[in-house]
Length: 561
Image (cartoon, rainbow, N blue to C red; front, side, top):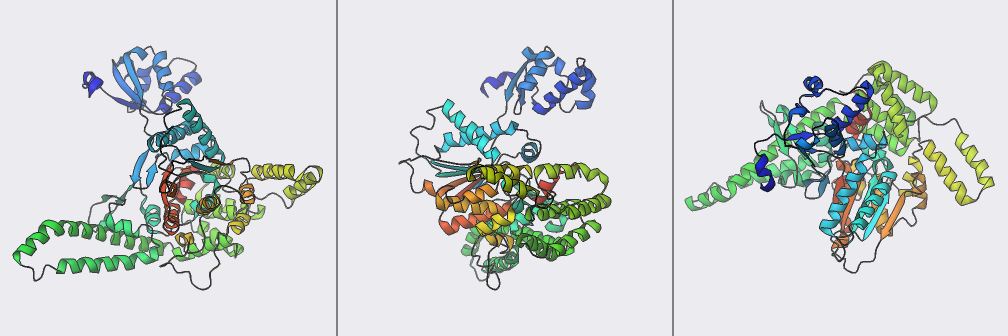
C-alpha cells in the first residue's frame, strides 16, 4: 500500500466534479455562503460532513479543480488530500475499448460542451505511449479535429516518449457520430446488436431475465470472446443464428453420447478433462437459445418485418408516402415514444429534412399521443440536426446560384457549405449514391454467405461510417472523396497525417484503430470485423460508449423514462 498505509482507517470519498460545480453555482445564485450542515441532508450520499473531515483522501473526476476551490473557500483544503482518478479506457473485449461516457454524445453534439475533449486526447496519448506512434492518422468531424489537435499538442509537450519506438498500430481513424446518424438509427439485425437493442448490454455484460434463464432468477452474463458460443454467433445475421445453435446442440449431444461404451479409465479422463467444459458450453448454449426465443417473441409482437421493410424503403428512397403513413400509425397506436421518434428522425435525415406539412403533422400527432412534455425534445432534435424541417422550396439554391455568379467556383463551394451547415442538411441521398451505400443485387441477398458489409442490415444498406473507412484505406487518404466530404459539410474538417516510418512492419500496417466520438453500434463493429476478414485487416475499436438508436433518442429526450 505504500503511502496509503497511514490512511487505511480513514474514509475515502468518490466525488464527481459536477457536484462541486453545482455547489458553486448554487452559492452564487443564493448570493450567500453555503452551510454544508444545512445541505448535508439533501446531498448526504454525495458529500458527508465535509467541514469535519481530517486528512481524508478524496478522488474526483475530470476537472476536480472545482472541488479544490469549494474546499478552499470553506477553509478545509489543508485538511484533505485530493487526487484525480484518471479512469479513461475500459477493455470490454479483445478488440473493443470503451471510455464509458454515454453522456459524451449529448454534452458535445447537443450542448456543445467540450469538457471531454481533453479526456479523449489523454486516452489517445496513453495509447501512443503504450503502442508507439501512429504512422497514418485520418479523421473527419469537428470533434475529431479538436481531439486530434489537442492530442498532438500533448505529444509535442512530452516529446521523446514515443520517439524511436516501433509503431504497433499502423492506422488510426477518428470519426464524429454526427457524420453518420443513419446507421445508428437503423434497427440492428446482427445477433449482438439485437441482444443490445432487446436487453441492453451495459459495460460488456447483460442481465438475462427469467424468460431467458428458464428459472425464477435473473442472471448477469459477460458477453465477450471468452464465451465460445457467443463469439461464433455475435456477428451473424439473426436469421442464421437458430440454425447454428441447433447444430451446436446436436454436436454437444454427440460428445455427451461418447460416454456410452467407455471403460473406467476412459470415463475418468472424460470426467476430469472434458465434462466441465461441456457443461459450461451447455449452460451458455441454453442461455443463447433462450435469448433468441425471447427476441423472437418480442420482435413478432412488434411486427418487426413490417418495421424493417419501412426502414429499407426510407434508406432506398422508395414509397416515402407509405412510410410516412406507417410512422403516423405507429404514433397513433402509441407503440413507443422512443421508437416513434427514431422513425421520424430516420425519415428526416434520409429525406434531407421533412417537408413543412409532414413536419407539423407528425409533430402534432406525436405531442397529442405522448404528451406536450416532449416539446423540448423536438427542439433538441432540431438543434442536433436529427429532425429538421426543409427550407421553403428553392430558397437555398437560389441564394447559392446568385452568389456563384459573383465569386469564384472555389469560394462559391465554401459558401454553399456554409449554407448547408446552417440548414443542417444531411445530403444522405447524394452521399448514398456517391458511395454506393445501397447495393444493387440480382435476386435474393445471401445472408449465409455475405458479399459485403451490407449484410449487417439484411443486404439493404452499407453503414456510411464503415464505407468511409474502407474508401480512405483504399485511397490512403481523402483524395477522390472531395465531393463526399463536401456533402458531409466537412470540407474544412477532414484531415490526414501520414508520416513515413520505415520502422512500421507490414503486420502493424494491417492493424487499425477506429475511434468513434459520440458512440458506435454493434452493427458497425460487426461490419468492420467482416471488412477486416475480407481485406486482411484487424480492427480495434475505441468508443466513448457503445450506443444504439434507443440510447441516441434518450440522450436527446427531455422526458426521462
